[in-house]
Image (tube, rainbow, N blue to C red; front, top):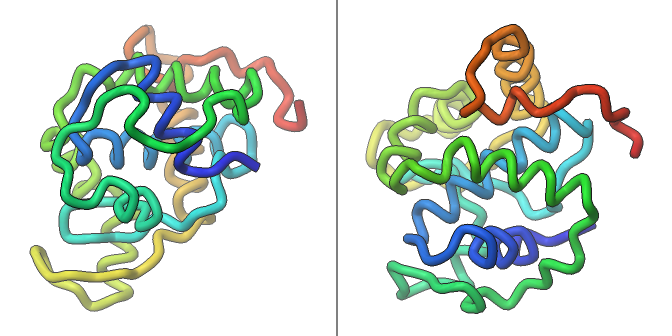
Length: 169
């Protein structure tokens, strides 16, 4: 299985420089859509419900002290990703890559996976929490998004990715 660093390195290589907040949120959306489309996690590291939104601690440790990241600044291996994983990441970046890190953070603050984890932790807005976002909740939410957008004509939503690929490929 790929690591979050592999995913982050691929995103930076394909999308170019971005803030650490944006990279964290794109990794979250990639994980969610991987669960919805392929039925498996994209990476094994847990996503935490931090005050700033979903964050993968292992990625945060890697870029700690940096606000902006360049391609090549994350020690991951994009070659560790298979074609289906790259397709998922490409679709998410195409759909969400135009948003800023702050816009993505605001969006995640309205979504059940982050809200439920914050609720479980008893963490009010702005208060630190290391509560893990459950993969089951993430998959349920992104399954719902994918189904909701399946009939939409919006080409900007990653849920429009062709669904004819079996999950076990």
